[in-house]
Image (cartoon, rainbow over all chains, first blue to last red; front, side):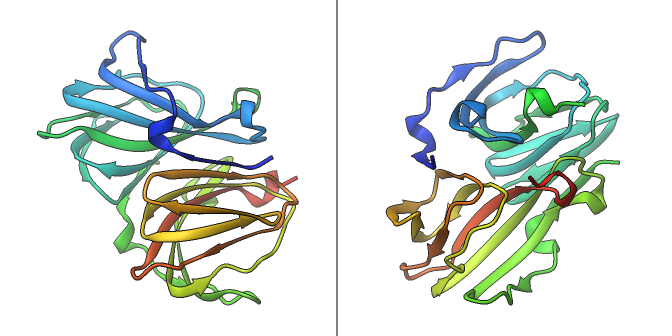
Length: 117
Length: 117
């Protein structure tokens, strides 16, 4: 069955993993919706917050919706804002930092658990 | 290797499949970038345009970036605008119609060809 939902109607959860600061996630489309291959999440990082500088064995595909930030991937820094697409390969260390004045909002897609390599 | 790109820097191609009207696509992240599981595309439908009312054996995960539109999924109609997430399962007939005054922009993720079921 299809799903059509405004992101604000999806629960906003604090990300509590180590190294995460002031970052929230909404799981918009997941395997619970029947999605067979990958999940869509919407993140909001508050000003001064960041995702952990970590790595894992699956990729990220990210699209910046709003705000200003800095992405560090394997030591390389990129300035990003609305309209940037970011591909982070598996097993590469990365973080996203909100160095702007407003919330940094972005979509981040990942393969579903059973498909993670 | 990572990829960090503003969507406007990616080639905008007219979608020429049957039934598509005034719709353009930018392939933001694909297997050519090393993506192992799924691709990210950004579509723009001009006012009055639409995607074909068709079905195929793979899913869509869509996020509306801008504009106003109507989505029809297996005969059911939904009004969508900025901030809507849409999951369309495999093998379900669907179309997106721009019934607004501005361009309708959205991301549409699909599994990569070799992963399509």
